[in-house]
Length: 465
Image (tube, rainbow, N blue to C red; front, side, top):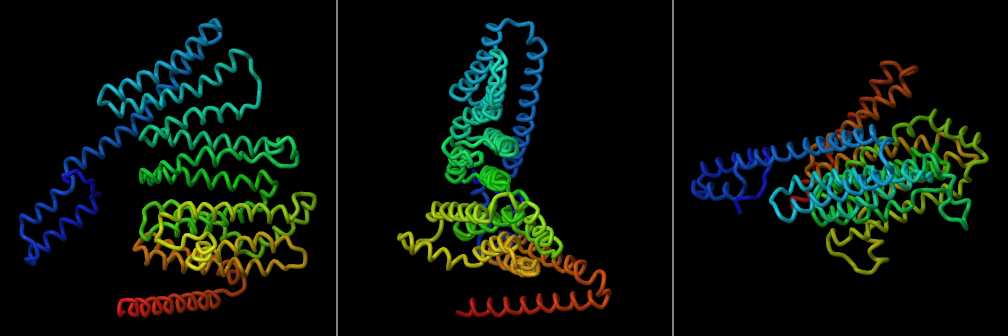
């Protein structure tokens, strides 16, 4: 019981509360001491932090050593016989992994074994390119990164270290970027030559990482894979020649991340990465979309690219993204409260419980389609974007209060203030002057005051039951 980790802020809070309870006579001094002993002592907590910092520095050192060794080999590479080259490549990779396995199974140097496994995975990736150079193989070069990631995957899943997960996520993100941004025209399906290359195996390779992160409760690791998923989905806009519409896809993914976050248990830490990326992606996408000039430019871009992907392809892409992410929320459904086991009933429950995030999803889908529909003025998507910005700011503030997360609430307040500044610059900066600004800020202040009053009354009603 005395090894439970505790943060410095929680330790200070606990010490203050225990002192107050002791002075009030609620607990005896020996009881306060017994509660303190349930958590790791201050010296052990400091030692744990030093171990984490030392491990991070050692990871960077291993990376530098690996690069130095590769450069040393490369300096004398041309002078070596091809047999010596192959023996060196396979010997270094096998020897590094063998040493790491020995340290892990026969000694207590677990951190050293993890560093050696990380170094061995780096050598494995370098070996792929060196073997190709020995045999003068010239092929689709992103495949080398893909096979590198495939080789790292089992080590990342079997070993309890974030280093290899970070390497795997970096490799998959690099491979997806190479495939989509440079080779989107190469269809992966020979019978559908019009189907672009979208690095479609990435979700399958990333799925074990998601499962591992949830099973271990690894928040930082989950954040890596959520970022990778967001990057891959946004790349689909470039694969389908809708890069000028990518801002809407970014907002759509951000809104769906809120849906996924809301599907976790109340107060779950595993929802934090989805909310963090949701705030950045949805909030960032709505900012340019709220300008009338931006909507005009989108309409002109559509007319200019009349030979690009038709609107129905865009709708299909957005529909597939929404359906896939909704299906992902069903996989997370056991993490939430109990509910009906029937799929349709669960879908109804999901829509009812999360109608606000789904409203943002609908808003982003509407912005993506209205702006390119003939006969619609840019004014309508501009109004939708501004209403969505206001609703997003208010919802983020309410979510911060509900979850008791000060940073989330502060983000909502700052986003509301950002909206007022943008609208003043957009609407009143040239014509309204000081009087226009005064009216704008007065209306925003009145809205915030009314919102605070409504929250106060709601809190009284809830606590009065």
